[in-house]
Length: 158
Image 1 (cartoon, rainbow, N blue to C red):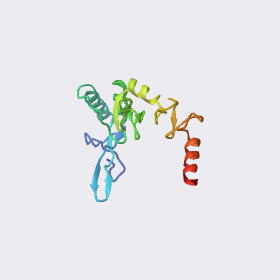
Image 2 (cartoon, one colour; image 1 turned 90 degrees about the vertical axis):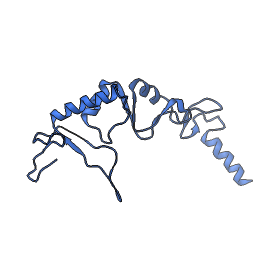
Image 3 (cartoon, rainbow, N blue to C red; image 1 turned 180 degrees about the horizontal axis):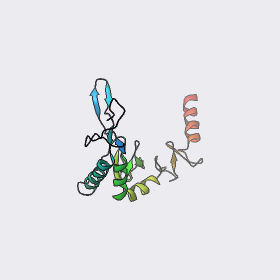
Image 4 (cartoon, rainbow, N blue to C red; image 1 turned 30 degrees about the vertical axis):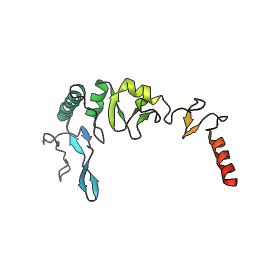
């Protein structure tokens, strides 16, 4: 927290110190109108304590959630625990729920790397080529963008 004299006091311990880290949790301080929670500013000592808390959450409690705006303590703890954050939109293949991870959660880094290599829109059901923007990437396939548009034009013209 910043004082009127522009000095920083840690939001965790309350002592005057040098600003070292900050984070903003998910949620709202008010629902009418919705306002995000204020950021929490912490000193170096409290950042180290917070990092140990995150490591405990990740390892012992199998915690999958995180803050909206990440602190360096959370980021370092996630790296030490070999987990990665999934941003909005998720990661993986939308057609196959076993190869997709929903957004806003931590998953193992190995799984994140595997899922991030899969095409987001999946594979074509007819020719097995990769889908791009919900259409087959193979121009000769009936599910390709050009073939689908030609079929629509024939239907509209008939």
